[in-house]
Image (cartoon, helix red, strand yellow):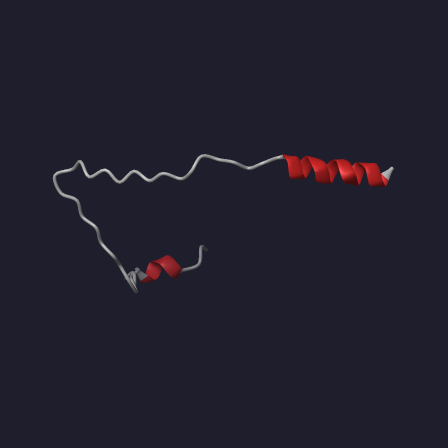
Length: 57
């Protein structure tokens, strides 16, 4: 009983082909200004009020 189920599972997995559409990227440049920025090692510094860390009492 287990062997026929295993064979059926393997055949069904093998017969299904995954053929999706190829990936396409929209690279149109239709604006007045096209800007491309490469950022590296960006750091965000936040100055917080000390009341933010107080306990709720």
